[in-house]
Image (cartoon, rainbow, N blue to C red):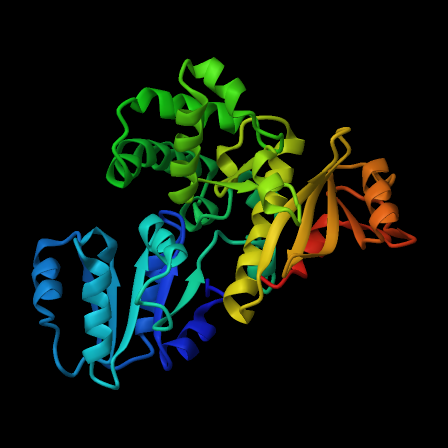
Length: 374
């Protein structure tokens, strides 16, 4: 199944390096190798492999190489300066693609001498917008909600294989990825935080409340949640505020990149699925257009809340409420739409009839999600 970024990445490779980042096992290596089929001389090197590591260190790939894939390079000490040197002295015809997860994304945010030398593409799980052209039974909202959009569980022959993958995936995240990323002295505590978050999807998260449950400090809870976010296990949706200082003080909502990790009602699982879809859409627009697209939510001090707000360059484009079966317009959605003159959309999973009232559209969720950018 072709990933939507493929053509744009090939175009970007003609101009700069390309970084492909995203969650573990989301298909970054597969995508890189598929793109490699467009070149006569492709070399794939993985820093985890001893033989490849020596080739990387000595820059000893064949001179005729047209397309160089460097996987897991962020594990190399001084990799940023190394990569800058490789890019600045490379053969003019050499195209370079670097794949990775947490540290590549963190590096992108920090800014440094690599600025201007690469394009970023964030690879996310499959979405309805990405697979809508597939005419098989895979093009199914229920399958995506239940299995999540990671390639292996989504494409698995049966639910047993999908569940088996998830069990091994979660174990690998806890025992390998987290310990590789940061020194964590209390692995059991971060595992408990993760399990609590799986049951709090879609609700504003209180660090203090989790700290009391796990018997650790709120500062440690925040640190653990930040680690989980950097590793693309979870993502935070913060309340929209033009005053950044005030926004930081408000509680974020937590969602999972893997929809199958959600524990809770059908409503929570569906809301998480919509959140992943909307985030992917926002990240894709940012990576493609350079405009700052963000996924936020709205909440007043009195507790009035709308699930999501699509924001571009600090301006709300649309507010969204998610329902499994209710076709009646949400009072909170109506409140924010009227008060701030905002376009509103109510996404309903099971809807008999679409309708529009003022600036609010009540639409079938599947139809809307298939129409997203990514």
